[in-house]
Length: 209
Length: 209
DNA sequence: ACAAAAATTAAACAATTGTTTGAATTAAAT
DNA sequence: ATTTAATTCAAACAATTGTTTAATTTTTGT
Image (cartoon, rainbow over all chains, first blue to last red; front, side, top):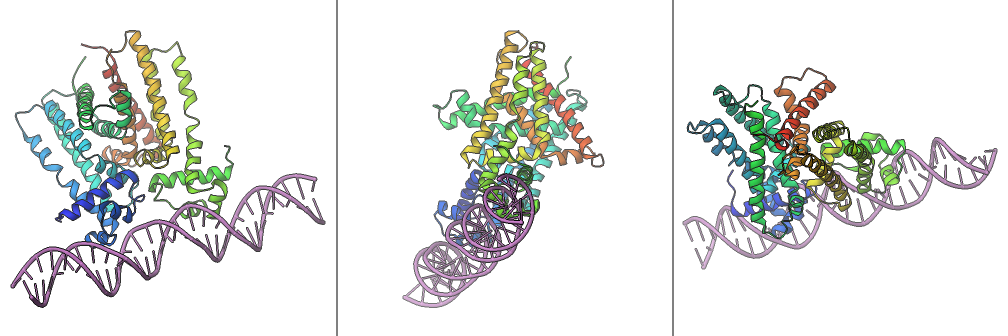
């Protein structure tokens, strides 16, 4: 489905509120007030609150896949370089769309709407498949260890990034960076997170004594 | 506060439902039905749905701290041994009380009730303080690297375990362990998680070329 | 300028929400 | 056995929920 400006505006405000208060904690009137529209417009444009949630996923999920697909096929990159790029890709994706990922976390714990749960899970499965492929490639080339638990690795990447996103205020205070501007702090966080996870992955993947 | 049997039964059923459906997604009638009590009993025993949630945290949070405190002071253990024990401690705690940790995750994303948010955060901060202490000890003894981002480390531990808990069904299918009994699979998961995170921590903490 | 379509609105809808009531039942105390 | 307190219950409560209605305004196409 294609969304017009007004619809996207509503979706993005709903996204923000769903992230802050959860799906059930957000009323259609909350959304209408924040978006400065009439309550009926939500049913008018989306059919229902539930369908509005589905529209949010439709809007956000589409853009994910393409960039990653082409990455794998690139022959000029070594397996570890690809893995590293995938890590940065993931960090960027989550930290650029923090609200959406909070919403997605909420969906993954409270498994209510099967259609949305399916959408959220498909992202996860695709991720797993891609990384698995990548690691096999590295193993064939003798650059990676033979025994690697891919799922645990992915869980570490996803979990670490999620955890950092959720507790970034705390991280900021701990590092005494309250005075630096938001976007600058975000860059610092990304950079450190990137190095951190790459170090972890290297330790798991690479052959050493 | 002290809870009697009936209260604990209600709390634990509420815990399960809050974990599955979220706080706002669970009605007091859902809880009453599942617990086979009258709806009014919830107000009677706890005052309100909100207070029931607070009671859940009161019941669960209390037991956490003591065991860890004594661990740090133990002179017979090396820093890395202590860190490893802390990792196992955390894995056990989360996987033994999965529902509660799902509830806590929900609280941490949708920051509504300040009292509960405070309770959840205090656990995190205490954790951070303890591990920081431990690492400083290891650094003094020359066993750990000088530059270590403790918060990122903790986020990796907490995030990885949370992620594993949330997606354990998927992990089970991926490893074709659907036929093994629940508790046996849980043991396998714990063991692998333990090794996994310890490996990660070792890579971050230990000095190498 | 006019007619058709789309967008917007206030009001109403029935259903569900958390909570309270006041009577009935059970348990404990004297 | 009688009184008192604690527990349980069905029913009612007002407030809030998502959704629909029907009228009105705005936009679009001709």
